[in-house]
Length: 132
Image (cartoon, rainbow, N blue to C red; front, top):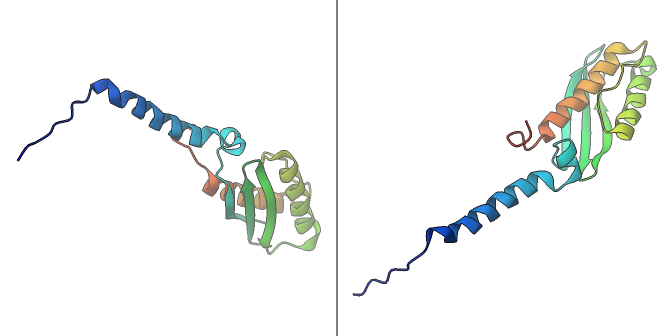
């Protein structure tokens, strides 16, 4: 029985290693939403505490950013609570951010809605080790 040995040079593996690292880094940097905000595309749900109870939202994220937000359930009054949440929903979709001032007269509803969106975005967060 003959044993064949393949002789490899240590430098042979360096390009493969660099290629693997490049793919990993590109996976976290290639998409604009991942690069800028660190979110993976998908649909995520979050909750926050409003004036009268929990606010439950569903956030849809694409490679371009936050695409849609739906208020799934809440215990807030139609005015000013729901009206404020709907206004904030539009602002978050416009800006792509949750760092928005609460609506006067509906502070707790506003904070609960933004907390729910942030909770959903935390679930969508990626690349924490590369972009802390």
